[in-house]
Amino acid sequence: MRKRNRNKPNQKGRNPTSRFARLDHRLLNSPAYRALSTAARALLVELTMLDNGENNGSLYLSIRDAAGRLGMADLSAVRSAFDELQELGFVEMTEAASFHVKAAERSRARCWRLTWLAGPGRKGPSMAFMDCQPQPGTKAHKRMERGMRALKTFRKARDSGRLPVLDSDTDG
Image (tube, rainbow, N blue to C red; front, side):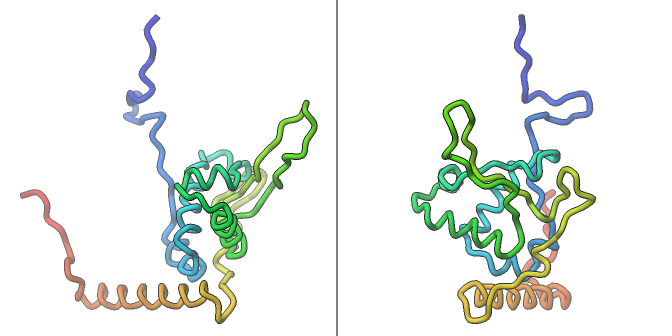
């Protein structure tokens, strides 16, 4: 019996193993996103990669597994990244970790929901991050201010036509 090639495109030209992680510009341009540390931004991408369009709210990822996916050894830094994502409204924990279970039951990592995507049993996304900002005087608040200034400068330059490269013509 011949093995079917999973990477071969189907009749519509789609590859069943190829997906993308969508990060909306409303999310990327929000003050809350600009306040995230580099580790929290990377973790957000990893959590987004777990979503298959039907499992938001059932995204299982432990701190240890997240550290492995991020290539980080410092578990406290990864824990802080999860905390940042929660505090700024990007993710909600739907189920706490349960590693103290009996032998017959299965232990589980924490379960997450991405707030900018609809989840099972929900009419739509909560977009909680749109209403969140870090406390004034914190590193996150300074990061947010710098990021928002950079976006403002970019938009001003773009709108006035002062970007170094406006269009790219690659067909030579």
